[in-house]
Length: 374
Length: 146
Image 1 (cartoon, chains in turn cyan, orange):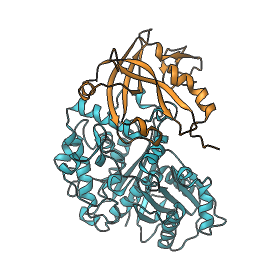
Image 2 (tube, one colour):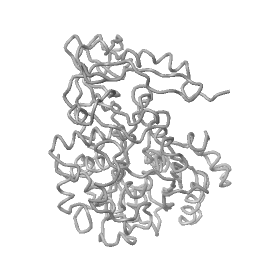
Image 3 (spheres, chains in turn purple, yellow):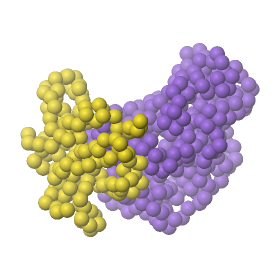
Image 4 (spheres, rainbow over the protein chains, first blue to last red):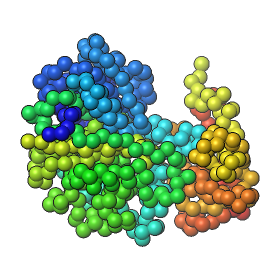
């Protein structure tokens, strides 16, 4: 056992429309649940991930008020923000544990269901360049629409092929009790859904929701969560999409190919805020050759029974898009999959998994390798 | 006291980007940037402002229509956006994400990729009842009539 950082506990609140709960309520709930699962350990640090909490709760220093709410009066805390890449906070927590802190809680929380649709679009547009993009009304969906259209043109796909991602995610989520969207969808359901930004349709977009997830990292291995963190890394590509030569590549995620070759993960949880990002991630990680991911999805790859399973949780497409908490949802799902908890026990025994979280549209990627130990 | 969504000083200092599409060019290696930068990837900080609006040719490479828009654009929806390549007088070109306007018909829209565009000065949004009327540069198919 070579790891020095272990998962002590995870707790997830099913994403949804939690109108009666504030961000502090949701975050507090999962943090207390995780702390209890970890044996009511003393926390040495609390790291909060939330992208939009200033906008939704009108609250700066949210981490401090959250800790007060939980009577963690003397626990140092901070909030980490790297677009909507929640695993950036986990990366900080990992370094803290590696540096000597014994138990560090990472809590991701977001309140997106409080906004009306048009207000939410305004909030999400903050992820684009405020002067050159969102001033004109550009939202990340527009960027994803360009990528989808160019990908379809370049590799000769029709929209049906792109929609296979969504079909697969809904298949996976049907049995996941943590998923926000648990209904199986047919291709026809997706083809008849409303257009958001041609060619992207409603079911290509991860549904924005309220949610919170918590992970406690520790220097001490846990007998209940026999999971260690092998590797955490962040890759950024701070270049606007319009300046990129190729919009059918994910420049940040491509660096994860080395991790796949080195650690040989067989379970993957990847950020799929839009169908195209899930498809491009498969290709960026080398799980599918360039231009082949939709074809392999149609052929039944990357699901139960395959040697490499992707997003058995249903991905963000079905877990819900919870901004800065999204990455922690993916992380928690991978932990449950590695532990073989229901319904993921169908996947059989897997020892190594990779989580890929993304900030904005391919501006930064966080990659975490988890290993199950006996 | 009305609540302002667009802060006047911020609008005022960004007018050169909205009205003239100002980017920057590195005087050392010639690379051009939009959004502008104050330091080039070559390491030089010797940059000059250039107006992409002076480009003699703009071509639409890819486009989409956004149907679910941010709150201040509700009266303008749907919004058209394009990846537009600007060909500068010195022979270089750069791609920008830009708003589109004045599409006459759906057929014209569907066949728009590869068409030449021209910039046009338009209202971008109105900031609630008492705020600023914000302007900027949008693109339409060249020689199209409104």
